[in-house]
Amino acid sequence: MASSVLLNSILIITALLMILLLSRPKLRNSEMWQATLTPFSSIIGSGFLVMAPLLASIVGLFSPVAVLGIVLLAYAIGHVIRFNILYVEPGIKAGTLSKRTKEIEYLGNISLGLAYMVAVAFYLSLLSSFLLNYLGFSDFTLERWLTTGIIIIIAVTGYFKGLAGLERMESLSMTVQLSIVVSLLIGLAVFGVNFVMSGEALEFTYPDRSIPVQIQMLAGALLVVQGFETSRFLGQKYSP
Figure 1 (tube, one colour):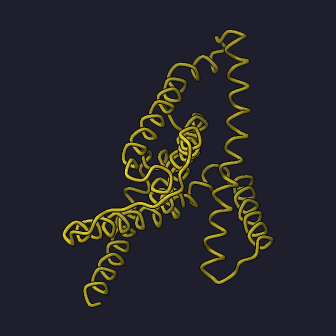
Figure 2 (cartoon, rainbow, N blue to C red):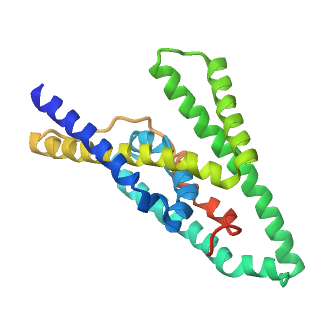
Figure 3 (cartoon, rainbow, N blue to C red):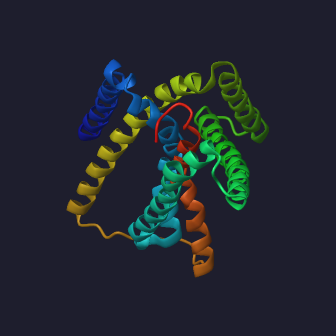
């Protein structure tokens, strides 16, 4: 009991120290940090709370392999986006793209916009569900209204304050989220060490699913590491 209280205290102190570290004016005023905020805040969300048990429920002991595959796929997608930023965007500004490339670019923007709307709505709905359940409410309609309210706040802030206004909100959000992530990783590391030292066997019980279904679920898990594509729309404010 005493060790548990001590660990919890250490994790809380760690989170507070991280908040102080990330709140330094030198970091907050850094152009590199500001350019990182929008994609970073899109990547890090409530997904990091559910990813480990989700993967364990899909592939069990093969979760590390699944994580590696998801990250490599995400990096490959990111490579395409980085290529576009470096070589396609200049062509857009210069008006030198071929007609076919312009059509592909236009369709890509529409697809990405629709996909991002779905992703944002999904994560905000998940956030609303977590919050209401924590407060003791289990009301689907209330969850939808809360999600809608958050979307309206974001939209109004973006309309009146532009990207700078959204970045200020993201800065506060990322400071809190990163502090939680660091504490979570420390807590998981301590738990892992204690588990290994206990000599207990690691067992997974999860539904028996077909390989195609497992692949589909893992493809959905890619949503957890998406978000970096938002850097595609920051070209007017930041250099490549």
